[in-house]
Length: 67
Image (cartoon, rainbow, N blue to C red):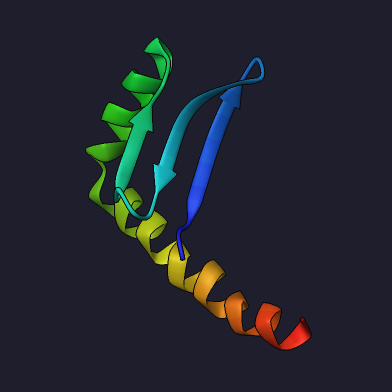
């Protein structure tokens, strides 16, 4: 299971957090700057990593039992 949160600007993916990578990755010039700033914030990275357990792992059992 992987948690992905993407940020878009003008219909283009700007920045993405992936729980598999464990950090933000930028895809545009502005996205690279955002990713660098956000990756320096330890509390933000911890919060994003915790989303995998809070969102994904919490709901996976619900999805499997409903199918």
